[in-house]
Length: 128
Image (cartoon, rainbow, N blue to C red; front, side, top):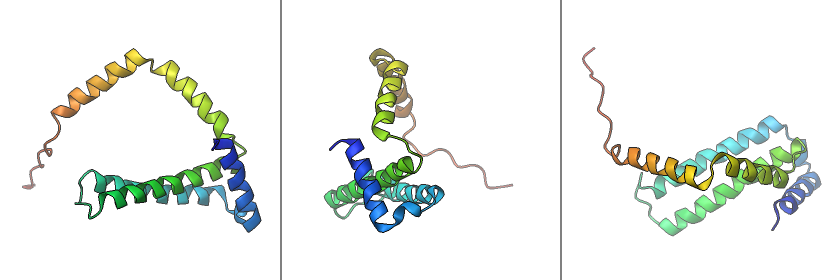
């Protein structure tokens, strides 16, 4: 599927149902709500809680990611933004900003810093 095809389908889907009349600010709030649901699934999959069904959790994460993207694509069409063109421009920007050698160096520094930060930070004193 092409991104532009999905974005066109979504706009037609919304128009058939009258959903295109939703204010963009409300569309954004719905996307943010989905981000919270994504955060919950990521935390569970990272071990915040023992997932009772890891594959089921991965399926829930996939569904929440799709829900969030749907609202972002809707926000884009509400402002007449072609997401396929925007993502192509973003690829060009990322490639110019982070050539492979620069990206590898930054990733190595990040991972090096993370190795020493796996323990919980010290608690602040409570005798104030």
